[in-house]
Structure formats: C-alpha cells, structure tokens
Length: 341
Image (cartoon, rainbow, N blue to C red; front, side, top):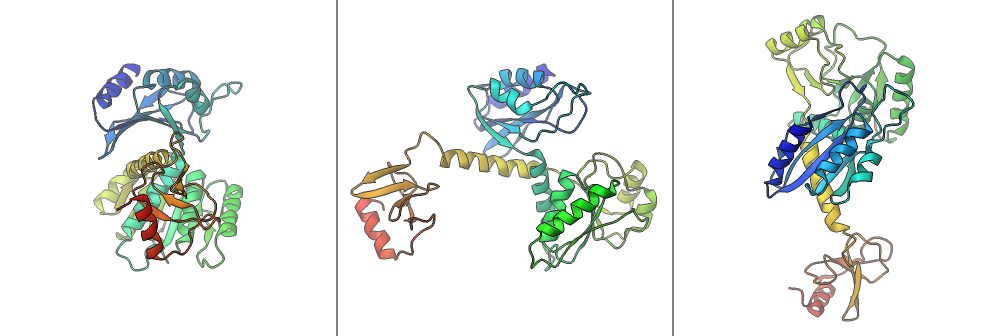
C-alpha cells in the first residue's frame, strides 16, 4: 500500500495544480491498516488521500507526504475504533505531530457527505416549483449522517420519516430535530416503528445505514417508478432488490461526495488567502486607516482588499462589524486619495 501511495504522490507532484492530500477515518474495526483513494482533480486542485485505522500508519503516511503537497486535510471527527480498548486512536494528533512543511487544514467527512446529499436532492427537484417542500421522505438509519440530513430536509419543508432499529435513540433523534427546527417551519420529523413492505407513500428514500441492506425484493415490487432512492451508506438495497430496481427503471443514486470536496477545497484556499497571518491587517495611508476585509475594526476604517497596495474598497466600517451607509461621492473621494482607479 505504501508503494501505491508513493506512486500516486509522484503523479500529483508533476501537476501544476494545487496539490492536496487528505487523511480520513471511519467507524470500522481495524481490519486493514489503511486504504488509498483514487486521484481526483478539477480546474484548480489535484488530490487524493488515505482512510486510516491506526496512529502508526497516520504518522508514517504523514512523513511521506510532508512537503510534497500544498495542503493536508485532516478529518477531525474521532471515528476510528480500536480492537484494543487500551489504545487511544487520534489520527488528527498523530498527523499534526509529524507535518512541518505542509499547510494543515481540517474537515469533517460526515458533514461533506451531508452537504453533497442535500445538494443532490435540491438538484433532483430543481424543476419542481416546491422543491423539497411537501415531499414525503424516508430516511433509513438515523446516526450522525441520517440525523443531519433529516434536519436539513425538515428545514427545507420536507415531511421526514425516520427509521432505526434502536427505537429509544430514534425517539430522541426525532425530538431533537423538531425541537431545533425554526418555529415558522411547518414540516416535522416523524419516527416509524417498522419498515412496511409498501413504501409508495414516499417520494424519496435515503439510505444512511452503515452498509446494512434494508430494502428487499418485495419492497421493490411494490414501488412506483417515480420514486427516487439515494444510497449514502453504500449498501441499502439487497442484491436481488438492486437488480430488480434497475430493471424497473427506479431512479437510483449512489452518493458521490466529489462536488462537496471540490467546494470545500475552494473554501480552504480562499480562507487561507483571506486570513494569511503574514499579511498586514491594517495601515495608516494618507491619514486613512486601511483595514483588510475579515477583520473587525473601529468606526471610520476603510475596508480594502490589500492594505499595502489597495485596489478595491469594500466600504467604511461602522465600528460594529458592518458597513456605514456611504454615498458614491464619498467612496470616489477615498479612491482618488488612494490613487485607486
């Protein structure tokens, strides 16, 4: 596996794009030490990563990639479970102890999954005037991902029905979602005690179980063809059910989180540029206090893109974290003083 990691690292090192490596982890017993993901790229970034199950390999991989990529993303959700309960696994700490020559950022893998799922659902119903509103949605599995997806869908107006074998946890989950939902939201989350053979009351089914199939052939036989199924946990349908669903032209999606990764990489890159600690945050120029955007400043400060060589004025600080209402003439006078075109 280390040989394959080095091969892929050599491939991305040849690229002129921004190079990124991500360290992931998951809720699994350590049957494998780690596995390597495929290389992906977009217009700006090229990246791949490893899903790791112990501290030793986290440190070993970190030594190999240190200085050979521009950014390292570390999954900060503590999800790895060790067979030996006396061993504390902390991938984040292990990687941070080693990396010295590569910039470090963190991410939450589950949150990227939720974001990708929500975006996909919105896309599916893009041409529906109500969008998600009024849709009956069944969420199978109400762990971390199922909970977060359900909450977002309720806030978007979906009637969310949640199923989980542990009914006590499910009841608490449903209560929490409804308790946190804005008062003006009509939609609610509801629990179901058992999975009926007839699922035709639902417009959308989302599987977030940990690879355990719940939908069988009998379910598929009764489904209407306009129903949509999204498999987040990668294994919500039994094999014979999947084959039948394909033959019956049921809309089936296996969630791909690539768009969420691409978006997050852009977020990381922009954040790093905006908050670069080496950039001067404020400076007095021609009796004007210039402050770079993203910094709280006193009333009357001029918020600009760069305090050394300003090319753009965003506004004048009101001293409360926002901008004063300013007419174009005032902005024009400041630009003239600063020699900004």
